[in-house]
Structures are given as structure tokens and as C-alpha cells.
Image (cartoon, rainbow, N blue to C red; front, side, top):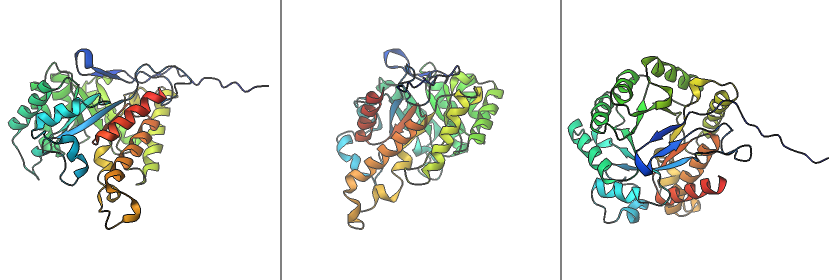
Length: 313
């Protein structure tokens, strides 16, 4: 007697969330099956891919990006180059120049940068911030105001600043809000509860559950993703039904396998390829775990992951 697999379709589903406006707006979420389980039921909105640019310029220790950004000397030109890349669904702008431990540019300059990038590209925009909690509160509020009506996603509201960021980004200016936790289902759920109690609609939120480069304790990341997906779909846990957006590039390109000299470790192969391979492997694992969007740095990674998604969907 032949085996007939019963489709595993749930009555619960992941919330839908749209970023951007117009024809190039991107919608993520909406699925009521496990990640990439298109054989159980159609998934209307495929996972999407973002490419990260930074107002400090692409990283000096990543010569692998030189060829792609050749001739693009300004932030706007680099953002336009990134937005035009085949496979890139949105652009993620890292405002690292505002970090007080770095260039510490004033908020007004960062607002002008964000406006210039938003006006210059035809893809949705994600704002990452400067990686300093106190400064991010100021940046997110002013940038959210300046980009009102553009339907921008702001990453990230954390436990330390969710009140200020949530109130400004989502409540005052109607933008989308990313909730960032540290690879723990309980922390993610607690933060989502706090943000919704603030008055932010769950339909205006995504989760950044955290990540790690493949091989660097990623099994813990994978187990967290699995627990969140199962809780959202099997248990109808509405507090965990937000789409997941995972910044991958910053993790994948920070490990020694991605950047160490080929002279030091010739057995590891060409340095030009190692970081790309690490980024692709990490992004693919994130998608298999339930990420509705991944943010990458290298154009080859973007093309490869985009093609992988197309094949799987």
C-alpha cells in the first residue's frame, strides 16, 4: 500500500507585513505551514532578501566588495548600486557613523543621509541604526519623522529602549518596528508582549531573534527558530506570529574564516570565496528555520540566496 503523506497545514499563520510603497513594496509572512514547506500548502509571500549598505562606507576589511562598489563613491551611489542588484528586494541602511564610539555624527546629518538614500532608491528601506542604544533612540525618532509615509522598517527596538523607539517609530509616525532579542524564545516573547502593551499593533512588528555565523553555536540559533515557528503555528501563540527578519551579513563577515589571510591559512581556500560561502550557509540556515527576510552584504550572496528561494518556492 503506497504511503500518502498528509499535508501539515495549520489553522494559525504568521502575520503579513509590508514595507515600502508602490510597485516595489515587499510583503512578508502570511504562511500557515512550516518554513519552506510549499509541498504542504502554497506560500503566497516568499522569503525576501535585503542588501546592507553603511554610511561609513563598505567595510575596509572586506576587499571582496571593491569590484561591486567600484565608482560608487557616495552613500547614495552605493545604495543605488545595491538597490539595482538582481535578487535584492530591499536596502538596509546601517547608520553606523552616528555611533558615539566612532564618528559620532550628529543626528541631523544622519536624517539627511537617510532621506537622501530613501529618495534615491526604488526599493523599500530598512534602517538599522548606529548600534548604540541611547543614540538610536534619537536617530530612530527623527528619521521616522522625516520618512513618514515611506513605510520604513526600523531595526531594532530592544528591551532597554522599546518604549522610546516604539512610541516614536510605530505610534507617532506609523512606521514598522523590529523587535530585537538575543536567541531566546522567552526573551523574544517578553519583548513582544511589552511592545504590544505599549500600543503597537502586532501587524506592525517583526522579530529579529538574533543569529550567529554557521558553525559558531548555530545549533542553538536553529533550536530557537524551531521553537518560535512551532509555537506560532502549532500552539497559535499570537505573541510569536510576527515575521522574522535576520541580519546575516554582520555575523557571517565577522568570523576569522571569512577574513583571515590566505597566507595564514592556505588550506582554507581563497579568501575571496570564504566569506561568501559563510554568508550563504548562514542565510540558508536562517531561511530553513523560519526567517521571512535575511539581510546580506555581498552581491554574490544576494544572488545565490535569491535563486535558492526561487527554486524552493
